[in-house]
Image (cartoon, rainbow, N blue to C red):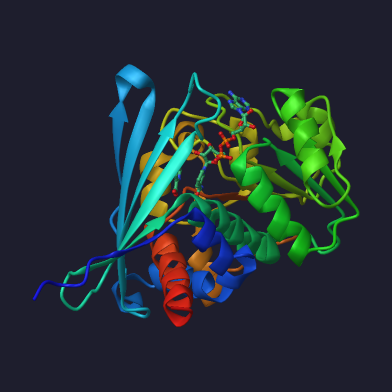
Length: 314
Ligand SMILES: NC(=O)C1=CN([C@@H]2O[C@H](COP(=O)(O)OP(=O)(O)OC[C@H]3O[C@@H](n4cnc5c(N)ncnc54)[C@H](O)[C@@H]3O)[C@@H](O)[C@H]2O)C=CC1
Ligand SMILES: O=C(O)C1=NCCCC1
């Protein structure tokens, strides 16, 4: 009598069960609040291990987490590469392993790329709901890769912007983006043009030096800073980091991994989970930055969501 082998849930199946990132909002809000509650919240999650692959300009991230509220145990393995020669290979690839927490049996191996795209955008949407100015009309996305699409989808589902703008380092990719998404998007020739007057800004690039300058940002705007996840990588300049109210997903991670936080010396005001719990205010009237690095527990609740939906249909 052998044990049941783990199931494999590929990208198409994950997409089918997680067709809208907004399906994750309740589980992610709870996970962020539980994470920021410390031991009482029941989230066990170390800062991820990131192993450099120097010869190839790549990184392997190992992201384990247990959530007592969900009784779910996972680890994500994610690779990300800076300068891939073959453009058909995505810069980020991920797999999530889901275990039975009662005995350690591996239950499922899930594609992690769709989960990563959707849970990251959903967390940015949670931050935006709390931190954006009252009458936000213009959304600006800097970067036109995988995360740009997932952010566009959930932001246009949840909020009503009068205008969406995109800028990318290579304009063709921005033009392609504007042609592929459902609503109208203005393609901008410079980051400055895209950002000027925007109420909500999303930075989703592989930049290693600042692409967003404080001078261009409208006072009171909200910025979701999603890229620059290495301690020496930047997306935002020092002035913007230091003159905004800074929110993070995890203080420990931000002080270990975020070049924007570490190198600017900006002070962290709160974790997003503290705002969700009501122990820190949101301050939407100020210029706010949510520095997102991505947390393993976000993958845990997303993988559980997909696995439960998959199990119900099988
Ligand atoms: N905070 C989080 O939870 C997560 C953050 N990320 C980060 O989000 C960012 C975007 O990820 P994806 O969309 O998957 O990547 P992608 O490779 O699909 O897209 C990256 C975009 O950045 C642009 N780009 C590349 N180098 C650049 C540079 N030096 N300056 C300006 N633009 C540049 C590319 O043209 C492309 O449009 C990455 O930094 C990634 O590490 C990704 C997953 C989760
Ligand atoms: O949370 C994640 O997943 C990632 N965050 C930063 C870059 C690699 C993937």
